[in-house]
Length: 366
Image (tube, rainbow, N blue to C red; front, side):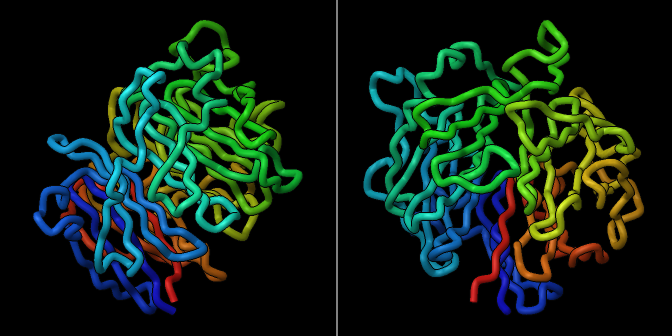
């Protein structure tokens, strides 16, 4: 079964193809435009539409600005919509900086984009044009959201879920830095903060209502949410009622990425980072940690990874699974290495010496 791994980097989009998820054919940076103006733009978000296998790439060029490109032939050719696909309305008094994450709805053609500055956009034409979700933009908390070290970014979009009790097409959970977790149950018209129990050491109070610096929220197959915060690792089956710390057993409670197993509840990968002031892996080792009991215990999951000093960390969207029946996991580092492993198996290198890896997405593409 063919698999595609899309790799967004600080300087362009790369892809890797494999029939066995062991041997990979890597290509890139892809020629997004024939004049080569955008080919080495930063690619902060990639998405693979589960309905059509259209690839979306959210780019940001220091010269030409941000845009969204799409490919309907698995990266062979790329297209940019004739009009800017994402733009704030004039009364918003803000300028679009970049896409941080794409997510796909159950209805074919429905795509969500979490962007900087913190906002949510919705597309109904497969990502060729987007409109602002005004309910979140007009939230009374918005003037109090502020940029984290990476920017004021809405980087987590989870359509259809607000708790572990089931899916609802009108529901959605989003998270941002720095603002926290918010949820809607009415298709985005109203939003409620869901941060109880999450600490924010840079704000007054032990667990403020909002303002947390979330780095990533990920949803497990049983509907349980896992989050890596700016200091703090948590889980919750009902975020509006609160979160429980699961940081004990990890070498540090700081990091960016969390990746639940797509089918096995309680199994999650975490990628620790020393601290907010030292963005290096603990002990200078490339070493993910894995739990198989919902965060009660953690153990290193580093078979096959380099034993020598390594200084690359894994950013918030630079780890994923392909979601296959027998899934593989993937991650890329700020040192330009990309690794893959079958579930619970030994990691192997997909490629190395790429530019700074910002995001990865994988899928079966047959």
